[in-house]
Length: 102
Image (cartoon, rainbow, N blue to C red):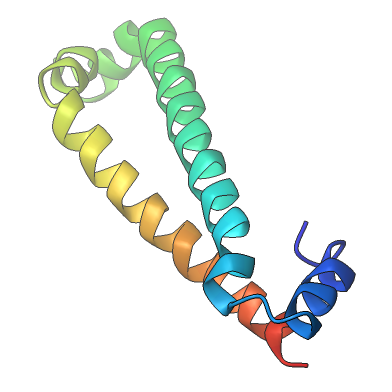
């Protein structure tokens, strides 16, 4: 989306918009995509583990992966969210910075 809107970024830069004013929408968009990605991934992970839990438990010598994920869900969700948010903000920042040079 940054590449397709590079003309608007250039125009905003020429009329005097600040760098943060131009970066803001792309950073917010990256954060929204990151949150949605974490939610979809966790839903898919839960469904896969729920479906294959008995097979995984047989292979891993009675280790119940479903219970482990349930008990540690908040920690896993927080780590995933923090990592993906930092990654989204940094990548959006770098990509927009490339087009801010006029």
